[in-house]
Length: 430
Image (cartoon, rainbow, N blue to C red):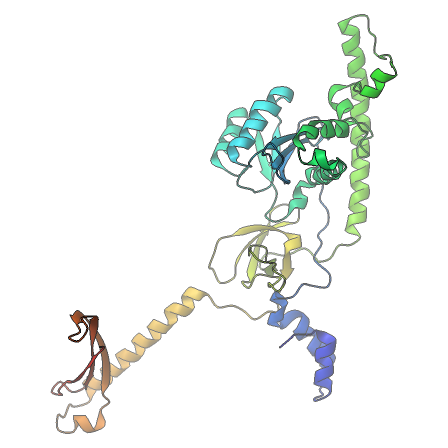
């Protein structure tokens, strides 16, 4: 009881016993074999190498996600965030719910009509995105879809990072403005789009439109517009030249920042690659309700690795070891190897083994009875009696108070002797 770890367990054992390689055996049992592995959080959580998503032009991929805030005066409590992965240009829509109809309305009847249909939409596995209507709309518009693995929001890291920035900007509003945050949402997002991104070296607005926006400060100081071309052709030529240069610089800067972030992240890698057939535990994230402070850290059921989905991403397909349940696709950070845990027997096989064993014993008894001669005179002395508990469906009325009562009968008989009489005792519930 308690499972206090290697050092404390080893101290208790040393005070009472000794054998060679005792420390090694205790450490192996506590850290690899003991069932408490399913209950405890590891000292060093699993951390797979970082895999990055690369895009090469605007709206090649759009990331979407929902934010849940306090309900404002107008009844809005959700924000649908839509963000272009290449330029980092973002749009945010206040919504009253997060239904599939709301998502389709904002993306296909607003965002797509302003900026065009993206090549791909990336999202999590929420039911507001994983549904027949949203899938059908993507098919009709020629938009491909991709999603993160379950319980791994880092797979949509860019929009998750923007969500954190957006919330920090909304917190700077006054208390009065916070009660009606919808009115300030568009201004806050526009301010973000107009500031330079460290990941690209340009503002999202500039990378999308090819020019810097005119801000209120420009109007206040009467700053002149730098772009003055004689003809439309000159403007287009100059615009193409600027954008070609900007895209090259933005791609180079984004790649450099991604590499730097990966090097920093991979310094804290914990855990090796998993091989097909390896036994693993899955992080217990399906149980809901309550604080969950004493909830088991890992699921009780052991799984087996089927395959790695791709060499570029640490995502694995796993299946239950006992054969009960469906295959799942899980990120490496939510898996822990457990090859040394005791093997689990298939539940169905264990349940079916009991009736088969009983049937074989019954056949042996019947064969023995056929070989032995039956003697009525001394069958009562050597044979066992069988107790039969029978519940009759007849419901009678109590003669005293009229309440229903059940008739129960206890019957004793000798199943081995065909001439034995049945002795019946009636038990009546009054």
